[in-house]
Amino acid sequence: MEPNLVLSLGSAIAVLGLFYTWHKDSRQSAETIATLAARVTALEHRAQKTDEVLQELLVATQDIKITLARIDTKLTSLEQEFNRKHNT
Image (cartoon, rainbow, N blue to C red; front, top):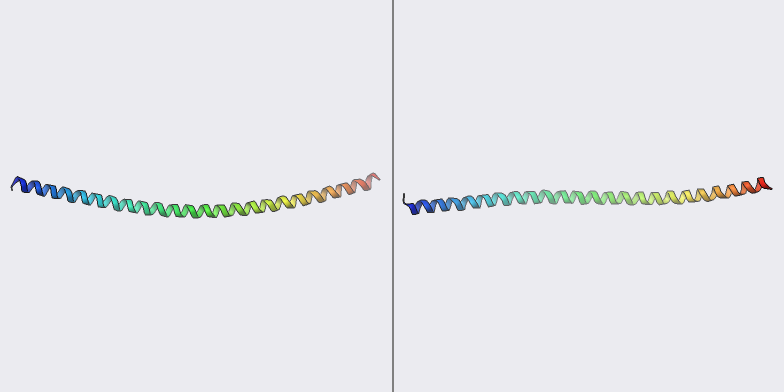
């Protein structure tokens, strides 16, 4: 074989090898990006659910505080009334 032909075949094989490697890497990168995008979506969904649960807990805590304030007010009123009846 002529040296130029061998050199040309070697160059063609090298170019094909580079193209194959680039294509394989880009496909793997696309798969990785798709996987990461799915994970981000799942995490965003979980974060939204967590925010909703925290909001419900905050509302429940506020309701408990209001109820405790009413109980405290009633107990204070009953205590004052009891003290007035027993001090007179």
